[in-house]
Every structure is written in structure tokens, then in C-alpha cells.
Length: 122
Image (tube, rainbow, N blue to C red; front, side, top):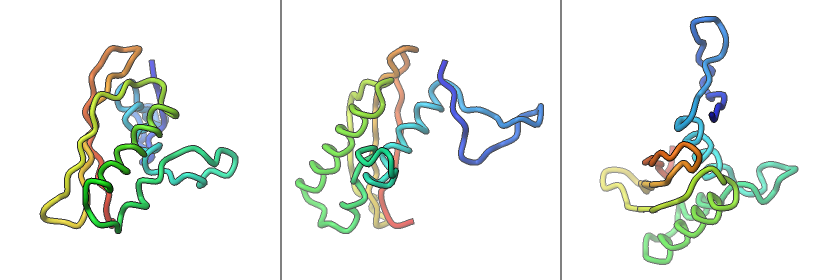
């Protein structure tokens, strides 16, 4: 069973921190890996991805391929609990951001998971 501490530190009924379990813990880990900039962790400089470097780039096929390759490399190297099935990247029409849809299998519990991330100005 996978467990993780949520960033919002919600309190459970017993006044302890409510933990994320199974699929939610893996989803948080995927998001952390992709949104952590390489070099941000001083003692593990290769951890993370550089997808934020594409934030102000022109949207073309090379930008999409670069983002896809960054995501694939980061998840294959830093999240061994999943098998990545597909990555779909599309621009959001109403806002200046990219929508990233991930589909992956969580290996040990045999669950397919869909996750959506947004890359843009917050």
C-alpha cells in the first residue's frame, strides 16, 4: 500500500494528519516530479523535469515533443511504481496554458489512472 503526506496537511478525525493512500499518493508523486525543476533539490540535482522551460516558447510540434520527452524521461526514471501509457498535450483555448493529460498504470495495484496537469502562468 502506498502512503504519502498531502501538502494541505488536512487533519483526520483523530487529530493526526490525514494521509494520501494508493492512487492519490502516486498522483501527488507524479505531480511533484514533473513540477520540480532539475537542480532544485541540492543533493539530488537530476531529480525532476525541465518542462517549465517551455512555458514561453512558441507552440509548435518541437515544443510538444520536448515537453513529452521531458515528461517521459522524468517519470520513467523517478517513478518506478507506474507504467506510462500515453501523454497528450494540448493548448487551453481560454487561457495561456497547456493542458497535459497523462494515462498510466500503477503496477503493484493494477489500476489505470488518468491525471491532468496544467503548465502555465499561475
